[in-house]
Amino acid sequence: MSRIKVRPFRFKAPEGMPRYWYKNDPILTHAFNAGLIMFPKGERFFIEVVSGFRKQIKNPQLLNDIKMFSAQEAHHSNVHELHNELLKAQGYDIGSIERDQDKKFRKIKKLLSRKRQLAIVVAYEHFTAMFGEAVLKDPRWLEGLPPAYVSFLRWHAAEEIEHKSVAFNVYQSIGGGYFTRVSMMVIAFAAFYKSVISYMRYFLKADGIKGNKAIIPLLKFMFISPGSFFQLALGHIKYFSPWFHPDKTQNMYLVDQWRQHDEADIAAIHATNIVKQND
Image (tube, rainbow, N blue to C red; front, side, top):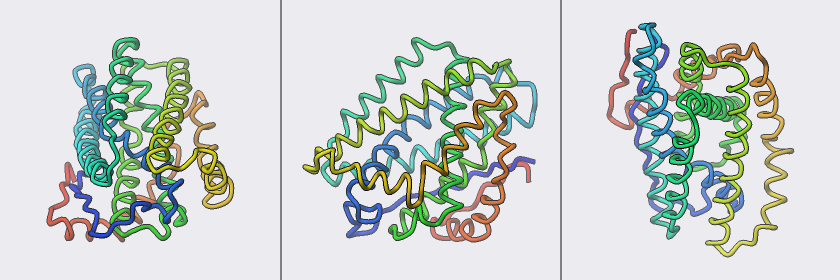
């Protein structure tokens, strides 16, 4: 039985969606835009890398998990594309960002072995699971957001927690070791936050907002409410333990709570049946 389920979802921003959708704050909105804009290409890269090891996997359960992981990530990529289309409709020329992403993934494929690429995916899957936990655990993350974004981000958060261990289990199955795992995390950490800062600067410049105005809202977000630094720091530290495994973080109850309150609504709203594999 797989705990991973595919739930097709379609993000549709209503008419009159505010330009600064995250708490009506241009700084925080563009911080989130800078992160979200990377998901379409990132999720496709994750699928390509993880699925590329199927022939080396003998465990039927893990093979099924890879299949479901890939299906979930494909839906995530498609939905984030819809958000990117909204950014284009708002007048942002994000072509340069998309080309930058393509260049970075080409570089990763050229310079890193397949095992190291997988370790990069393992690191990013840890990121998304940590963010997913924070979003579902602390209502301050999504407080005051348009309902379309609340539904979208909670759905993505739940599914990231749901498949949090798949890439890690594949990495272990193909003999991935500790040093490669943590060294690739250092690279992934630096690359992610460097990209977020770079892309955020683009959005701020496009709106005529000087970068120094971003400091105070970001500091408040990180250290006061919701206090993202404190919520995420421990997760980063745990990753460097030789005994780390995603399933040691007991957060599946958040997915169960999400399923109880949101899953049926998503199925009804989007006129789709929840696909269940091996239930």
